[in-house]
Length: 454
Image (tube, rainbow, N blue to C red):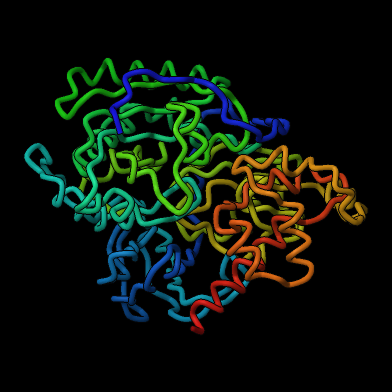
């Protein structure tokens, strides 16, 4: 593919425009207090579950490794606070199942400073060195996918990357953590982009930002100027039209360059790697300090929150503690969405912890949930609203009818179910209130189980 020297800045086809509800876009990031206990699930990513390297009763300091792995698609974990290992075993997970976890009780008198790690000079670090350092941080995609970052930045031998695309769209309603990171941590972001370019061998980096976040674009451009000459290449900040799901990497590449990623392929096949702004900003801070990932910025928002905002939250903080601090003490799990309203999932319990891939906590009021519960589901009327909104050009109506008949194999083989990334556009526009995305998730899971069985 020829290296494009221009940007289209045009919207991709289809998609939807839900109300933005960016209630916290103008509020500075605040730090959440450390809880009395943290719960660290060992499975916060795809791949093999790492093994605990601590024992019951062991004292740990903030940032100390507590779980390690030798699987390339897995990551280690670090202690989010200084304290004592109180429990190792099964605890409720984000998806409702019980998962192996490490519970650490905080030392009451601890300052909770980062006491693990040593500053290092990365001036002469090569690609393999950078990738190993990223792996050691335990970093996964902070945009929500939680894919191990070192694996995402590893370029296959047969491929060559010319562009690192940095995703700063954050199109999901309500969520603003990436927006605030670009404004307040822009220097860390630019440094992280440099590391990403060195890891992939990319000659340039492009930060794609929706045009409703011009203050974020200005902050990133100012940070690029402050950084001076970028020896690894050039870094740009480009505006793209505001539309959902612009944050999908395939939609972002379409908006920036007018190119379509072929079915079944990844951006690296066209010489590009896409990464989230929050992920790279965190790397820009962690790698020079030689530290692991122990906290992240989370948007706590919604009509049921008295103190909405973007908070720096220690990983493993129980959801109940977060909600009490943010001013939502009387809610129950059925009123909580982990993530945004389009792609997030309902909380299984108030005892689940904040994890690496959790970008937001959306709190609804009981009245809001009652309105949703009263909505009835009707038969499909063949209106084609879902077809007109699907950014991947699929036929959600037909897929939904096949799912109702449990014809899952046809959904995958004939109607490209695997290309659906569950953005929720079809469910959002359906006048019959058919839970299409939920049907597709079930179908995918059944197909995965069939493949494993074979």
